[in-house]
Amino acid sequence: MKPPVLAAELIDDRPSVSMRALCRLCRVDAAWVSELVEEGVLQPSGEGPLNWRFDAHALRRARLARRLQRDFELNVTALALVVDLIEEVQRLRRVAGRW
View 1 (cartoon, rainbow, N blue to C red):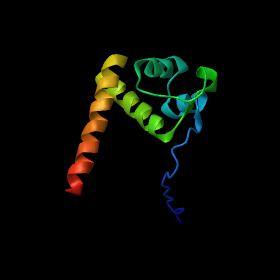
View 2: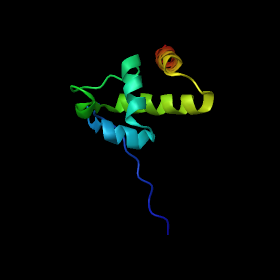
View 3: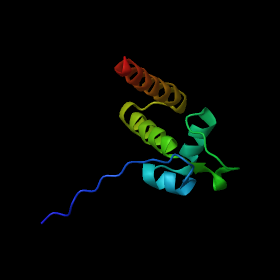
View 4: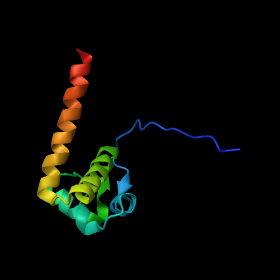
């Protein structure tokens, strides 16, 4: 008998993931995350990398950036632009769906 599949919905976007946890979840190193922060892709809370905390939105952005970099070999500047554009298209689709 297979175990039941559990589903969860995130209802809280407060900072909750450390730099170390984000690196582990995205399978990247801290230098890569720091580059994303410098480029504005991620906005952590906390002072300095040792105290940075990332919310669920940042985790989604980091995972998206990692996939884009892996699949298209984009540099960090291009990643910032593409991630922003993808999120804007998603936002516009949500808005258009309400009409």
